[in-house]
Image (tube, rainbow, N blue to C red):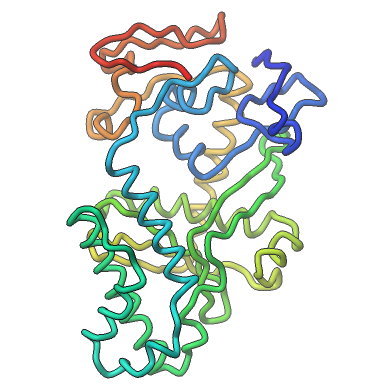
Length: 314
């Protein structure tokens, strides 16, 4: 098991960390986020490189244009919902083109055509939703009830209390229930549906397990549950909303159990799959794909051999 006995001041103050030591009685709890759980599912070995569970040091992650664009667009969408004025949009209700142009004005120019296309798609969706809400007499539901909502919860996994944490892009209210909506800036593929359902089920779990005061502080009603979830891929002009799926929650619970067991057994194997290899930020350090990084369980650190790429430790 991990022999980490010293943690950062932040981890100690928070009470949770990725450098979890199950033998340290007074140590911080294991932190699990939607991203960290997804990273473990993508490849356990890359989880070690990214989240540094054994205190050996992280491997620098390649930051590409897609990542930077994603951050920029997420920030722009958050700013849109903070700034949009329903009253100013109302006179354009019968002019869809003017309405789209009006909403587009809330977004930045965009430094490249791909980003600008995404802003246009988001503006068009906002306009369509606005008109729908006006026609149905539910304009009060146009704006989300939650914008970049951060939730924390304690949850027991295989007899271990872990700390769950997540930031939900948007939470809407409709038909008597909450609808978390995730924004993704990459292209949509039908093969992503299962993964998206697991991500949304993680958010549902946070809703169900966090303390009532956490929801109240976020401006949400703890007596209202998550009835639907959805995702928006503006690059593909694709939005999808569905009722929650029990099977997806079961899958999340199984994944949480596997991650906890990985810490207990120090088993973080490489998981190479040719179709996802190019999307891995640590591909040049992938042993199973011919790279040069191996995880030494006995020394509890990553041995790095540079091959083809100058990837350094932090």
